[in-house]
Image (cartoon, rainbow, N blue to C red; front, side, top):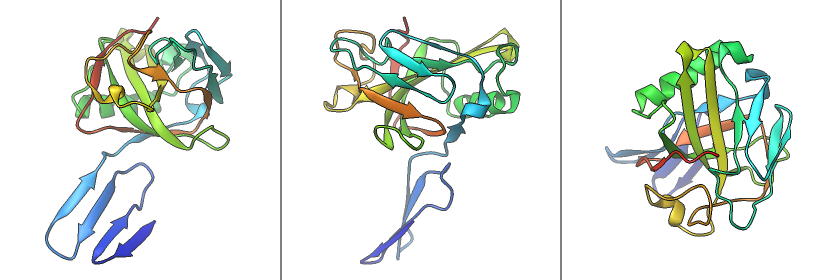
Length: 194
């Protein structure tokens, strides 16, 4: 994609990379960070929280219960080797979390920009994401909950993401493959999966 307007160009060569803004001068601004893609071929098993209807490993639907947050309405691909996950994909995601200084002990969750697969309610949005890596990678849970961004409460670190707000779940259908990019500056919240 390229847009030229008054000496500013916007270019994105690779869907797993952030967007770089270039000017005619010496300044460059990078928005977003390199991300990762999760496909249905990367896992065979999953878990989910209340208000979620899984569509096997192809995607899931969220009801957007009036009081539920994305920490309660979650979908969790199981990425560990003992769980039928793709070891190379798990290594890639674990390296991404480590490189960005993100917790992988199930204590903190983070806000990510997500581009959802074909047939999803929206193609882009925000998701609450956590990685629980244990047992040397034989077991690994990749938690995700779709965030309703109708208010800006989700932008405040340390918010309640489980129930009764201020962060709620967006109802809809969410399909893979999905591209995840960490929102910068990092927004971390306490883990509250049910």
